[in-house]
Image 1 (tube, rainbow, N blue to C red):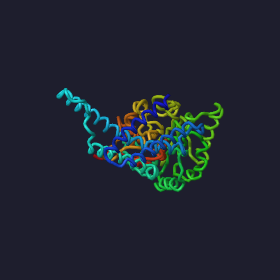
Image 2: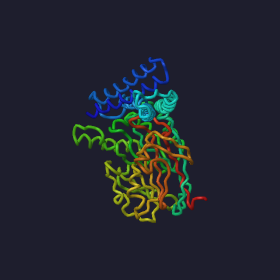
Image 3: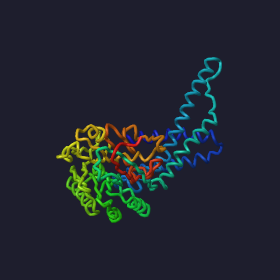
Image 4: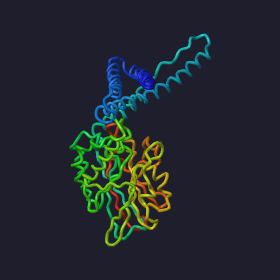
Amino acid sequence: MRWIIFIVIYVLLDIYSYQVFKTVSKYSWIYYIYLFLSLGVLANLLYQFNNGEGDGWAGARSYAVGFFLVFFVPKLIFFIFMFGEDIVRLFVGGGRKLANSGTDFNLPSRRKFISQIALGLAAIPFASMLYGMYKGRYDFRVLKYTLYFDDLPEAFDGYRISQISDVHSGSFDNPEKIKYGVDLLREQDSDVVFFTGDLVNDVASEMEDWKDLFSTVKARDGVFSILGNHDYGDYKNWGSAAAKRENLQALKNTHAEMGWNLMLNEHRFLEKNGERIALVGVENWGAGGFKKNGDLDKASEGLTAKDFKILLSHDPSHWDEKVRTDEKHFQLTLSGHTHGMQFGIEIPGWFQWSPVQYRYEHWGGIYEEMGRVLNVNRGFGFLAYPGRVGIWPEISVIELKKGPKPA
């Protein structure tokens, strides 16, 4: 029934799309080509999700979603303009009928310039989302931040952190581009590297072709990692509970094989010149229906508010709900999870928008409240939609400085 409703809505939007092309051009073959492609995209989506082969978001299924969105978003723009114009036409036609009761009720003709505006605006997401699939998903960016803390131990003044998150290796299909991203991470030459969850989409074996490459990521004080919601295999249909447990253990082994220190509700100390900071790593904790395996109390047992702490927690809603008000005062939290929805507009220092902000209050970049700082990494990889538009794959580099933030 859900698929039937979905198809009806899609076809309804196509009817309005036809109105745009019909009004703008007298050549009907233009619309028929569009209709052929549009229905082909719909048929492929239905096939990929109903052929009984696989239950993930990678490969052909991911591209089916991508091309569907490429066509669907412009249709929404067409609908907004055409339906809005229909309401105006209805009122105008009704007004004429009331003014002259002897005439038949007729709707005014569609105005060409309205359809031209709709077509022009719809071309923007159409082209952008195609670009996002072709190039944007591997357009890695290094975002650098300098953070100031009065209680940072003197020995860690100038300490450099690199953070990546949400690798989603099951979506990768270009070894050369992934190597470029990993090399870019290595070039930052930070003191420590943190990975904040979602190494795979569903299955540990998705890392098999990539673990040698990611094993080359090194740092003077090590590479530390945590689990994200996708790492538990909750979004795959397993034959048995035992198979699911074995998959999770295999993924934990993968972290170890790559030389990454996986932290499971625990803490460790980074020491330098007789001083130290605490590194706290929790399992996934997410608001709503997400897994809540993260145990902040267990992970920070024995620590006090005076200890300088860096917390690794995959989902930023953990910071919203628990971390920022915790009496132990977690100075810096590093998260990921949102991907910035892989779609948005960002002008550094001026403007930041993504649809994901209507779900997550803190979704991309640096946030500070009550002396606590959160960085939400926008993700290294991608999921479902095989692209990125305006929200690029990110490597965060954070330099810690002792003292107050300069005015």
